[in-house]
Amino acid sequence: MFKYKQKLNLLHMASQVTLNRMLIRGICMDSLSKKLEPKENTIPPILVYAQSLASIAPLGSASAYLTYALSYSLSSTVIAGILGSLIYFLWVVIGYRYSKVIASTGGTYEFARAGGGELTGRIAGWLYWISYMIYLPSATTYLASVVLPSEFSLTPITIALIEVLIPIILTLFLLAGIKPPLFYALATSSIEVILILILGIKVLSVTGLSIEPLALKVPISDFFQGALGVGFTLAGGGASFFLGYEAIGKGKTVGKSYLIAYWIAAIAVLFAAYFEIAAAGYSNVGVTNLLNITNYPGFYIAKKFMGNTFSLVFFIFTANSLIGSVLAAYVALSRLSYSLIRKDMLKSIFVVAVPFTLVNLIASLTGQYLNVYSITTEISLVTLYASHVIVSGVFPSFINKISRLQALDVLLAIAAVILMGYGVYSYVVPYSYPSSLIGLASLVSGILLGVISFTKRR
Image 1 (cartoon, rainbow, N blue to C red):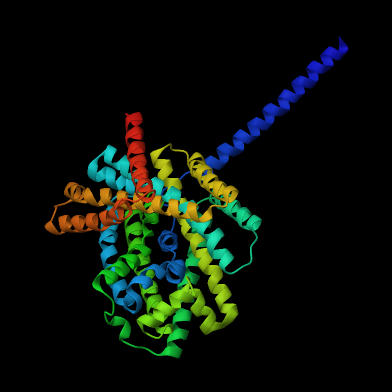
Image 2 (cartoon, helix red, strand yellow):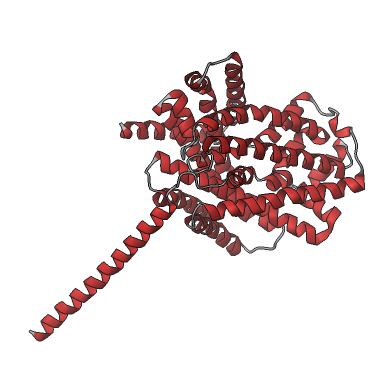
């Protein structure tokens, strides 16, 4: 009998300990959830600007992404870049007009909702959600499997570990609150722009200046491909749209920060295009030879003109540029999830963390990094352009609700729809397997998620 009572007492004590632990965990989770909740008027304008600039990834754009534009427009990439910057500015103006009025955690979802109603908003919101969600593993897989091994000798196991650790570390960073990632973005993106300026000044002090990059030396079709390449290189600054509710100054701060970040990034990329062409001898042949040598002209030029130490720093911040861009997208995505799914920031972060980590885990286990990168990149771009088509398409309706609609607003919307629509079209037509199928499937998925969430909400 005594032993029986003793067992009961032990079981009771064990259950009490378990309950206490669960209670403590619950309190901790509740405390963390409250800490992470978006707080109105708490983020300074400089950090909103940092969110925009980091998401464009100035050094990553100048050192790696610019390669696509250079491969088409060659030594004419500067004037192609000027045109591309102005073309993409059509969407920037639309985003700016929306963000000045609508200050929320929902960003593009709220924009489309204001112009086209709840269903339209949810479809645009979920397309954007898919785009940003898939961008996270796309960029980090590219970093772990392509960028880092290009400079360091990494074993397959090391690459696999990096691939899995990145989403875990970024998630922990985000769980620290909104300000640490934004301060990190401010510091690193500012250094990126400074590094571009230092390298450019050094290159031009050696090569001298020339008006050759302002001449058209490629076929018109290649020139326009280069222009679009530069334009889409500057995409991403809209990550600040999702900080509207938290920004001090609300919509005015977001809109102003978006414009400033866009033009700083555009000038940095155009300057990089100029000095990279200068380093190649201001000729089409020189640019072609440069691209035959390297896929990272910025890094190659840094090593050639500034030596190993500077080039290593340049490389580290180029890699970090991708991390900064992913972190900015993660911040934006957590807030979009908060608006679309549930008003709980902790759960919204984990809604993103689980698929992000899962895709990277699949890539690390299979070793199919390039396939994962190419598929995720296509899905991300197609859904991004599709969401922009919707947001641009309902822009006149939005303007008509808040002020007097003018012909210029309609023309702006039409031009942006054509530009973004071309982005969707280029990935789906002409039909090719599996590329077109992936693009179509991602579009259908976004539409279905939008319809389902709209139906459940009702």
